Amino acid sequence: MARKQETYNNYPYGKSGGNKRRHSLLGTLLFIILLALSLSFSVALAIAYVTPYVSPSTFGSLTIVGIFAPILFVCVASCMLLWIVMWRWRMALALFIVLLPGIMRFSDFYNIDVMREGELPREKGSFTVMSYNVRSLYDDDHNTTTDSLVNYLSNNELADIVCFQEFRRDAEGVERIDSLFNRRYKRCYVSDAVEYSNVVMRTYSCYPIIAKGEMQNIYRGTSQWCDIVVGSDTMRLFNNHLYSMHISGDESADIHSGEILGDSDRMMSIVDRIAGNSAIRAEHVDMLRELIDESPYKNVVLGDFNDVPMSFVYNKLIDNLVDTFVEQGSGYGYTFRPMYGMLRIDYILHSHGIKSLYYYANENAEVSDHLPILVRLKFEDK
Image (cartoon, rainbow, N blue to C red):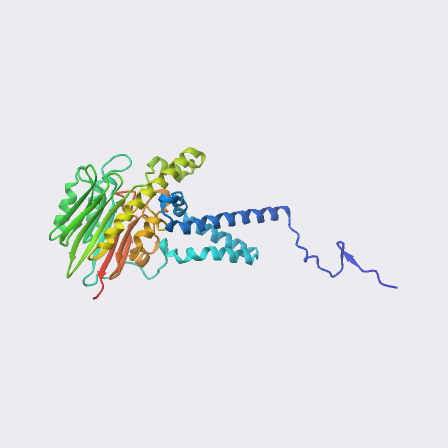
């Protein structure tokens, strides 16, 4: 007579029920949410990868996605870690593949280098260059920031070449800035290019400026070039202020607080504005690129580009040039205080044949909504 098989919880004793995966309603819901987020963030990040190669005049809305590329990268990486915790290796691998192109461009946004703890001793033949958008020397309350700029320049290393964007020649006390440069330099060379009215891009140099020119488009961006003799070498320096994003202080504050999310009309207005203005910058950069390529000297290209590294404008300008932040920067490379300090839109690029020795964006400077960038460069041995 056969023994009756013992059962436990309706399963034959000793037989595991684990072969049939049982999900609770909550677990299934979380799985679906994570899957939806993973797909959404992955698609958005893939679009961000394409942004630098598509002209804004063709599809300007891609510019918005490129702006948020660092956030999208972090979101996809977070989803990947959650899939790993859930032992979903195939999903985690799929997201890792999506992250790979971003890993290749990670240094455009963030650099880890524990060895860079300060500026190295000045090498013979090296020189310093600073770029700073001083915002017309006025703050949000329309008070002059001239005194703040003079104090900043007096209390910090004064670069051998200083390039300002949005420098107002008729600002109260502006003559003190000229006096400071005349005192510090053995001889001061100055070059202006009008942006609009009394607002100019100004270049101060302790080295001789032997030629200069400009590419001016009133209210739509300005580029200035100067041929500067540094020791036995000559370089062509391009000081640029590309067309603004035109996001007001109030809009920036509402974006920061999240209030803008409740106003779809304002959100669409900002999106349309950024897309349209990006197309204007792209046209400017097409002409600027021709000037750079025609230069008879090695180039230094700097200024306020009003575009992030994951953009058509940056991709066009960086061709055959070196980004000093990528070479020598450390930490998260933002240069614009609003928008949660998320944006790097100010740059100093240079030709091969010039090397970067040092990069510093001063977060303590309070003259403007931009940060000043200081770099040390040197012509490589011929």
